[in-house]
Image (tube, rainbow, N blue to C red; front, side, top):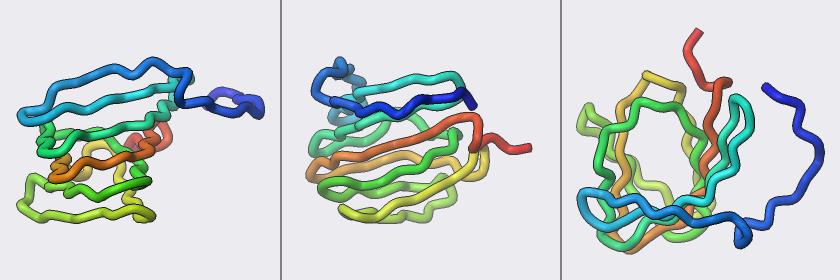
Length: 114
């Protein structure tokens, strides 16, 4: 992990990048440090991710709600104020949003399996 001095983040000043899902789209604003990525992510209404993700994340739902589908068939709904955490390679998952959602997502080397 790098040494990160105290700083504030003005998310509105960070470029918003669009990624297409199978349905709908995701918009990411990303800050990248060595071994650490922080993103403000918005999924549109009727969003379905275009892949099963193997990466570890800490996900906090800021607004709205969404479903994390696990490849095992389990579905977990997160609403504003709720979070989940998973390490790399432990649960294949993808996001589905019916009405749109805003998330804060943190991932990095600290979530890798030893």
